[in-house]
Image 1 (cartoon, rainbow, N blue to C red):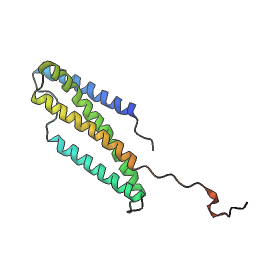
Image 2: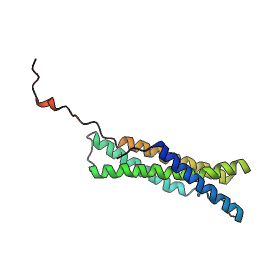
Image 3: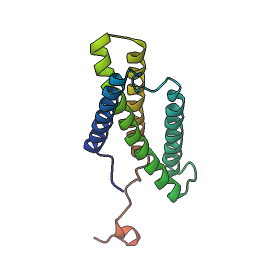
Image 4: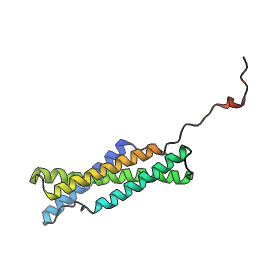
Length: 153
């Protein structure tokens, strides 16, 4: 399985930001509110981060021999961590455009503060994804075939 790539996450952030910018312009032209999530979204983002981190710690403890975790569940945890990182990048990108546009237009307002908090939550999801990916890394296998042989001089 491949590792998370910073360039892929950056592209995901930029795509979310471009989509948000287009929707923000459309909403402004029709007189609607900006497309910034409410603070209640933090509950679900926090829950996702907590579950992913909990599962990552269980995988790490299993690799250290302090617990049992199925290999397929460890692979699923890795995929979940990577998905959380991509979702976090998209959420951070989604809130980057309103954050920058509204901050320069109106200064700090409740909407800008919400966008800033949710941008930070998206970045936290990316960080949790990277951390859990590291926790799911298997220790190197012993490839030395001479462990059963007798060393002679």
